[in-house]
Image 1 (tube, rainbow, N blue to C red):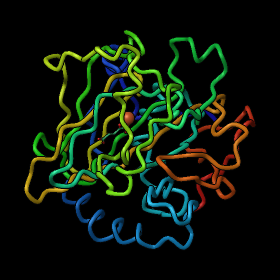
Image 2 (image 1 turned 180 degrees about the vertical axis):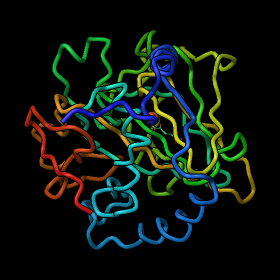
Image 3 (image 1 turned 45 degrees about the vertical axis):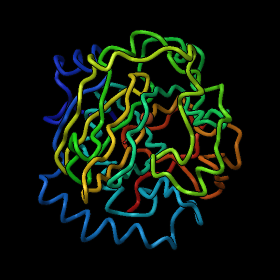
Length: 297
Ligand SMILES: O=C(O)CCC(=O)C(=O)O
Ligand SMILES: [Fe+2]
């Protein structure tokens, strides 16, 4: 089943921009009033109901698109998926959704890059075939969806355009810099006490902030990026304005997700993969190396 080009697909020009910058957007999934209503009246409440979620007893709340219809509709929406398909092709798996809240007073997310999503524990979550790992083809992208307005004041995202064509400034496999004390106080950085600082290839390297592009978006808007593009976010310096976002991460079926793992380590937790599966959001899985579910809600 091939996916037709639609009004939601990226144009050739947009694809070129994505390739040049490493990110593209914002685009609109819902208008902001609709998103605020959906977020406040539905999604926030549904997130508290954890009976059917895949990772019980986890504060991370990963992959709630696997049990919540509202989120499954978002990650399978053609408005999003057609754009991801323009970049990576028709066959697509959503392998992760995660939350990035930023509360008043929270620090910004440090500049970082992610390749195989080692996530500080020296344990790659994604294993692409070698030719993809070293090649130019995109095999994993993230879609960052704003549940609330994201502003310079409350901690919107920022990117270093073109940095994905430069180096890996971070070496994820350095891993294991988990700070249990910080976890105990829960610093709300989104990384629960981990620091990218220790993963720098060259500890004296600093990105040139003057080249950063800021990404202020309205609730209901989203953008797409490759996690090789240096990205981070501003601190939330507002008094009362919490910024909430959901990141939906997609791979092509050639990429093995949580290869040979029964559990995985994430930000100080051990999560059991028993009920986990990737979600086929487009096309088909002709490779068969991952546990794949089709949308069912
Ligand atoms: O929302 C943030 O502050 C960080 C998000 C991020 O790093 C990601 O989605 O990969
Ligand atoms: Fe990130």
